[in-house]
Image (cartoon, rainbow, N blue to C red; front, top):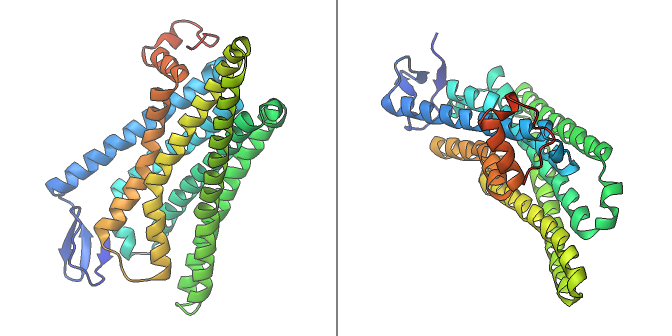
Length: 330
C-alpha cells in the first residue's frame, strides 16, 4: 500500500512523490531526480558509516589514542555513526516531506532519533570544550581532574540527557494531539525551553569557553616568548600540542554550528510561527544538519597526524597481519 501524504495548501511536489487526488503518494516508479537523490543520500550514509568506524576502531585499537579527549571523540563518533546507520536510511525510505504532513508513529520515532543524536553531539562537544579548557587553562589540574572516570560520567550524562530531551519533545507532541490544540501555549513553552536547553545554552557555554581558551593561549604564547631558550623549547612543544588540539576541536565545533544553526533557527521560527515553511527548505536544512556527521572524520584525518597514521594502518589491513596496537603514531 502506498504511503499517502495529505496536501496542505502547497503546489510543491517532492520528486519521490506523485499527486493523486488530494494526497501525495510515494511513487512506486521513482523519477530520475528521486533516484539520484536516493543514490546521493546512500553515498553519504556509506561515507558517514565508514569514516566514523575508522575513528572508533582507531581509538579502541591503538593504545596511544587511549586518552580522555579521545574517549569523548569516540563517543561523538558513535553518535555520528548512528546517524549513518539509522538517520539517513530512514530518511531515504521515508522522505522528510512525508513527515511534514503526517504525524504517525514512524514520524515521531524518526524525529526522536534525530533529536537524540543531535543533542548528544551538542553535549559531547560541550564536554570536549570543558576538557580543552582544563588542558590549556589549568594544565596542572588536567590529569587529576579530567580522568577516565570523569569522562565516563560526561559521556553517560550526554546520552541520558539527550534521550530525556527527545522523550520530552515526543510527550509534548503527543499531548498536543490529545488535547486537540487547546494546550498550544503549554506545548510552545515546552518547545522553547527544549530548544534553549538542548542547543542555545550549550552553544553559548562552548563559545564562552573557547573564547577563554583563546585568550589564555595568547597569554601563554607571550609568556613563552619572554622565557629563556631552554625553557621555551620544552614548554613550546607542550603548548603547541595543546593549541593544535584546541584548534582542531574548535573547527569541529565550528563546522557543527554551521551545519546545525540553520536547522535550529528554522525550528525556533516554526515554534513561534506555525506558518508552513516550504518543503524544500525543511528538507535541505535537515540534510545539511545530518551531513555534519560525515565531516568530523575528515577534520581529524586532516589535522591529526595520529589519526592519519591510524587510518592508513587500518585501511591497508595491517591490523589483521600483526599487532600494531602499541605502534607509535606520528
